[in-house]
Length: 375
Image 1 (cartoon, rainbow, N blue to C red):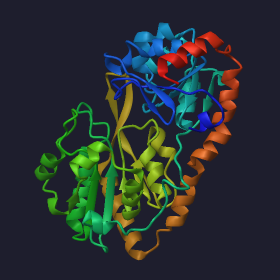
Image 2 (cartoon, one colour):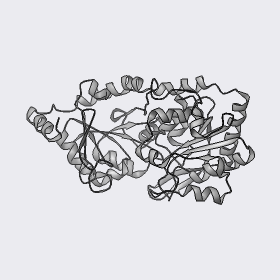
Image 3 (cartoon, helix red, strand yellow):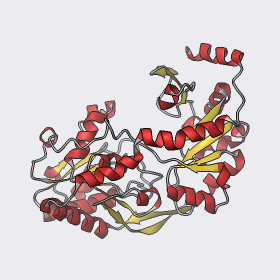
Image 4 (cartoon, one colour):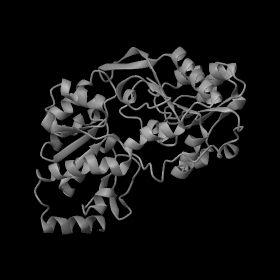
C-alpha cells in the first residue's frame, strides 16, 4: 500500500492461494498457476506487467525458470536460513542477474561471501506496524484464552508444516516446554498453530501425550477461526498475554513473529543461528544448537539444544515472577522494525535505484494491462 500511495502502479503475483485473479484495495492479485510455486505462470505475469519485479520467496525453487527471468528488471527479497548459503540460492542470482535484497544482516554477509557484488545487493528487513497493529495492550486477553491471571504463559506461533525435517523444531521446543511445565504447576502454554499436522506436519497432540506433557495446561486456537485467519487485533492480544514467546527453529530467513511479539512487549526465545540471531532484544534469550546437514539444499541447519531451551524458560519464569521484565524496553527494540521507518529508509531509495534501470511502460501496454486486470 505504501508503494501505491507513493503513486506507483502495483500488482501482486500469487504463487499459492489465489485460484483466480482478484482485487485487494484496488491492487490486482494475479492468479497462481497449476504447478507448485506457480512456475508455469509467474514468469509470464511478470513479463506482461513490465516495470520492476520484486520476488519474495525462497530463491532455490525458482531455478527451474531462472532463464525466463534474465531479461526482467528483477530484484529478489531472499531468505537465507542455512550456513553457508545453499548452492541453489547462489545459482539463482548468478543465472538471473537479479538484484539481491537480504532480509537480515546475516543473509547480507552470506551473499557477500559467495561473491554477489555490493552494488547488486542491499539489506531491507521485514517490518511491521508498531503504531497500531502490534502494541502492548496488557494481559487482559487471558480470560478469553482460558489462562489464569497469575500463570506463567509461554506462547508459540509457528506453521506446522514439514516432517523431514521439522524446521520449526516442534519436538525440541515442546519437549523443553513440557519439562518446564512439569516443574511449575502454574506454567501454561498456548500453541498458535494447527495441531494435527494436516498440512504434512507433525501430530502435536500425539507427541505431547507420548512425552507425558500436562495436556490440561496447553491451549490451542479454535480450528475454524484459525483457518479463516485470526485478525491482527486478536493476535496482538495473544502476544501481549504471554510472558515469553518460544520460537527456536532449525533456521529462519527472518522470523516475523519474533518482532511482532517484542513489539507487544513480550521477550522471545529463538535460535542463535541464521536470521534469528540478530532479532532478540532485551530479556530475550538465544539458543545454541548442533549442526544438522540438509541434504536437500546442501548446507547446514541446526537442531536447537533442549536443555538450553528449558533453562531459558526457567530464566524468564524467574524474571517474570520477580517483576524485573521491562516490557517497554522489549518493545523499544522492535520499533526499529516499524514499517513506515523501514519503507522510508530502505524501500524508497531502492525503488528509485531500480526505476532508473527500467524503461517506462508503453501507453498501449498499460491500457492493455488495465483491461486485462480490470483496473
